[in-house]
Image: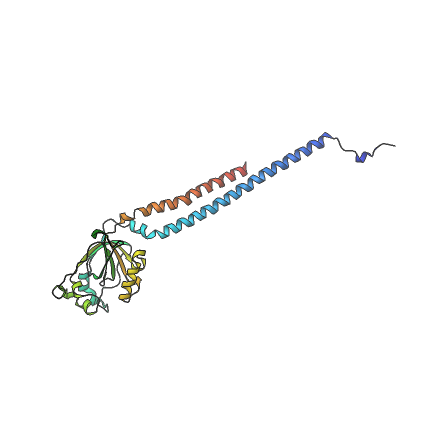
Length: 268
């Protein structure tokens, strides 16, 4: 009788050992390739997320600076809007305006304009520092002819003899309580940036609100003119736009390269 059962004897066939070794090597190779593929896919999705986030941030920055960018595109020579006082005298009353004012159509909004003949009512001197020199003092006034809040560094001087200096052509403004006689004697010329009242810079918003309440109008019915502003003052805006656009575009470039490398690796 044999000493052991042949069915329980371990196989010593070298071919089986070789096949088992090959299978183990293939499994190890598959695990490494799969891990690398998963890492590549995760990297691509991460790049997609970063690109989208940068694009959103760029859009927000551009939206916040769109007004300045638009003003930068304005021509350096201002658009001549004429003499508003002469326009008032010549045609405002015939156009059916209830208070004798000019029609509300005006503009262009956010444009570089020049106009004269403004009536400086309710002038206010403003300065960040009470001890600021005269050149650093700014002035605000309201012209009822076009409902314009004007910000300027040019002093507003109203004569001391109102009865003799009043402009008789603007008597209706005085009768309606929109101007004092001595204010109609002063004609102001300005050149700068024209904005809608509801788009006024933050530092001018309280003044726009105050003037709007006095004339019982909404701020979006008023205009704001920043005297002395030029399109070249906003030359920083295109630089900001270029930097904002560069970030997502660069990220998109790296994303496209990563996708191409992934496809090339899958084909090889």
